[in-house]
Length: 297
Image (cartoon, rainbow, N blue to C red; front, side, top):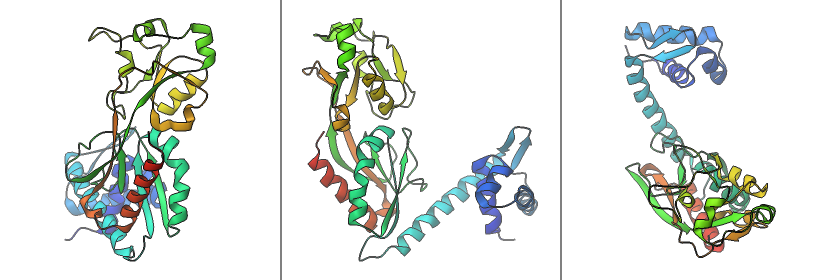
């Protein structure tokens, strides 16, 4: 008996949501209707797909296998639909863009109006996440990454190189003094990025400068958001290194130790092979390159 597409769609929603209730809300179905669809699918396959327990649902081994296949099929269908409905003459439809929260909120979001103004038949979804969404699985159409892509089978283009600025608020420096050498940072409050999956390689390099290798200074505060670090610096909390792409968001802060040798941030525009001929992707890439050329980091 062939698999029922409606049941597979419900199964995938339940697998991603982890409960009948949440999947029902997504699908606009009742919990009982969702449960019946899953029961019917399990009976047709003669295998259990979920372990039921008080805190929710967990996929069985067979369920994991089926969900991987279903996710891939639905991702390919979504990509195919987007390509088929796009006009070859002009870009139309939605483009899903993912990038880091820092770059997306401070640099990209304020410029999107220019892109959409030039392409009125395109709409945009901006997915800001410091972890990397899976482009091959259609979690997004394109990505702007702050390092060379690790995922294979993706088209990539280097679009910019950014630097860093070590900054503090005038109020903080008035109270704590101004460091003249990297070693002076030992006597200051340092704010760094605090997460096990940082969005930029060597993001906490400031903790190491002026120290013996392997003995980084202990930060006073860790924040898992570059924009959060910026606000903390503005409040007078301490000193931080922030990417130069923040641009005018750094206005009013004092730049420290300008001669300091810092790592560079290489930005890449990335998309899957299937999107190579997408008009939306090509015009968005051209927009990015033009905007970055007009506002170098």
